[in-house]
Length: 322
Image (cartoon, rainbow, N blue to C red):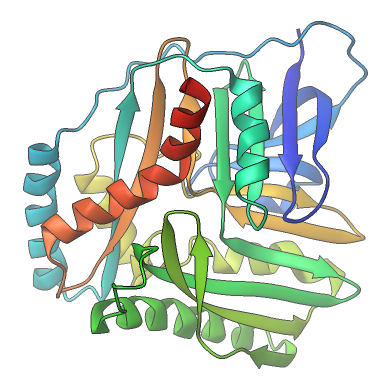
């Protein structure tokens, strides 16, 4: 049996591929469809091959332990204290949520495509890493005709007209925006244009978003990808200090959550940050959820934010179940 890829770039048609994933050493080595973990240490490129065998979805053998609400609150309290002690502007604490049920994985993918037209939707399965699925709202790089595009996406609230943005969300988003601006400028890119701040709606949640457009030579795409990722939207700022704290505090492995996923070639690139994603096992589904902490964070609100984000996939899962 071969490995499997299904993907749908926002507002385009779904694509399916048969073949196998090959592990490569560097993000600079990718061509075609690829996926990487958070730290860009495990990077897999898909090599397409003709395969008429019946579809097989792989399940990972690893053991994953759920995190209770109280465990999260205890961890969050420690995480927040370290942010304050170390003078970190922002850091992302993630958790997992286990859904104890099996699901028609291909139907799940099709429903995500219908529900989230502005997201990068994917389904991948391999003997290397099992089966993953997601609907990510966060573009890292879009490239076409020497023009690059990226976004800063941060700050989360439930998609509810009664909830207004607070200073905390504006600060979160501004940290990411300033970081991206600095990284683009450090490469000496031309014609950088920054949009006005806007609200981006993604199913049950909404985010603050700023778009960037710029001139980008084709041979510098992956250099920019390496420079940008992980942005403060998934790591924090300062980046190195935030990542050290994340690795110390988080008990689970992020794996592909908040890593990179998408396509890269000479003509165009569509590379996304792997958010709103899940790992699918035979009898349960593991959701990966994160929230941005600043010194003004209220821990119970951060828990609530992860629950709101979980509904991006849960609402679709429940519809299929029903």
